[in-house]
Length: 461
Ligand code: CA
Image (cartoon, rainbow, N blue to C red; front, side, top):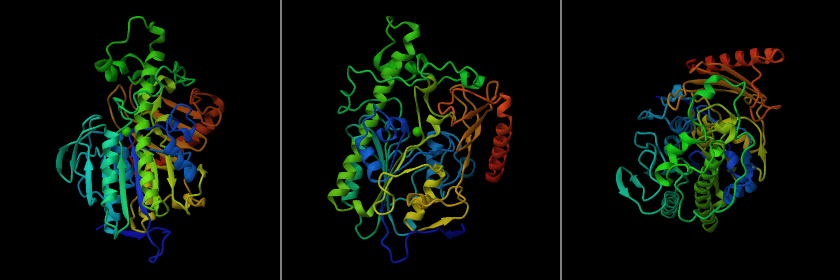
């Protein structure tokens, strides 16, 4: 038995409980979303959520990789505690997740789309998920245990199935629907409706696309996640052939970047279109006022910053998750919320929204007070990060991020430590760990890292 205690719930027993629609995309970086400042991303519907709801400016994952972050979202616990440290790990059967708790509390629960946690989904009245990573075109799906072949582009298939479930929903109960998109995860296979976007245009490069990583840890230079030849061979060569001989070597990174960023943004646009269709449905059914809509992604992604793509590392673009919350009458429309929130806060938040009971051993806490622009005095001002995978020339990473600084330790290659002043150097270009003026802050962050790790009971490097 798991001990439970009531959260600071918003709803009295007599209050009508809101419905929940939770969009989670895969690898959709905040900097690719208009509301977060992207000039190129086509995200009018996600931007609508920012206008009609609240945008979180500092939402982070505690382990920047797909399966582990999803497990953190579902359980509200760090990777070492929920059993999913790497993409090879399965969510243990019987895990206590927020869908299970909401279902027990009387919600009708469903997940449509990406699951990726290896064991079959539990805690849902209805589930229809992609096996593994899933395919972009004509994807197979497993619906309540039965495999089926679907026709069409994956973002549209997921949206159609989500709408079909909403139409046939149990009207006697509040619902919690998880719409978890595959896009814009690699290999960025573009849908028919998005193929023409950006044709002939040039997407601006990030200022640090050609970062030479001077002064950064040797571990960061040793891996294989750079925009350029390794990426082209991994993701594009089969479909588009080799990099043309006329591209000079010094221009390869910029040339690959254009192909990469356009296809990435096209895939993300298909998710945005799906969000819009569900929002239109909620409007048409008169459900918008009684439904909390949340949009996020399982982690961030490098879009050429530092010359990188992918995630895993502890730099900002990788660990930052977009988070938009529309809850009419609760989340202030147009609010931008700066408090530091984490992927382990999602489960306690959903439990709080539903007025359900939360397990005592959660690492996260409910964000509901922040929706209402209340700031609990003891809200966190730092968090511990821990990455466990090997592969791509990487290895374990741990670190601590405060509101002003970040300390990163590498447990592979020749190791090393990095310290960044996020106020003066938000792009993390200057590692100040060896600078005498930073000695006190380095010591303070090192102490904070140890304190947080011990508090969580997480294993060190
Ligand atoms: Ca992911």
